[in-house]
Length: 279
Ligand code: COA
Image (cartoon, rainbow, N blue to C red; front, top):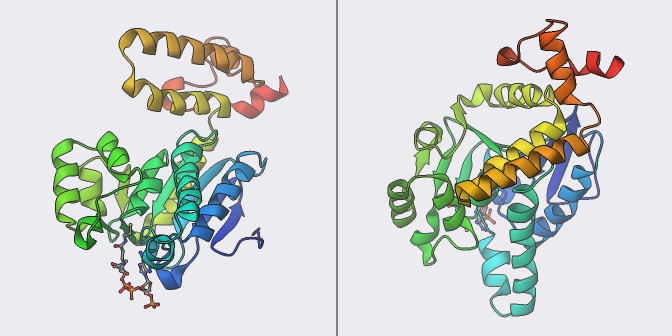
């Protein structure tokens, strides 16, 4: 199923997995203002959509994203500070605020070039699976700016400083395998397997209790900048939040299926959610 009310993005739904596609292949999916506004509108809609369990962010054609649109986002707004401000806010909002704190798991499926500003949404997704053939570049240094918006920040949060320094200061290109090696993505696979590996991960995640998953992924992000006392308190509160929100009662059902029914081992997979619902 596809939503035709957007022009620069595409939404394809398939058995719980929603592919959110940056869709300007003729411009290598460079982000123009319209794309930022459409993403900013689509993400909250998908968050509330019962048919969307997982969001996979990817690019149309053979590119993930060529970064901000140099014509429409940069040169076109140089003399329009008010619009630059509005678009700038939408640009950060859909990626940093919406994607980073998303209530559902998000996977970036990097199918080709990922350049400059395109790093931000890749890094803001919970997981990133890239093709070995993908080409990453922090190109900003090559055309007179630094990796702005939140690119430098997201990059420095994700990888070790020596790597961030090298790639930001040289703009040097690197492939999926190198991106995996430096911990910038989750996994790199041959392009021919990219979609299958991404869907397998999505299906694995869909087996888990969504409230437990939501709290877990938000906690993993949040504790990075906390001290031990803060993290201890935050995690206790987040655990209480699961019990409050979880109508499936994962905790009791998980323990019951292991201790009483002896029907599964948590080490090797999730408790049976369907069975738990019918009891
Ligand atoms: N902004 C605006 N237009 C862009 C763009 C961008 N970031 N990236 C690509 N395009 C446009 C090109 O201008 C070209 O438009 P045209 O057909 O009207 O001339 C079209 O997309 C195809 O680009 P092209 O360079 O011919 O494709 P390619 O496959 O040979 O190369 C890239 C792809 C991504 C390597 C190359 O386009 C590139 O280096 N783009 C700039 C990326 C960048 O520096 N982004 C940082 C922004 S923060």
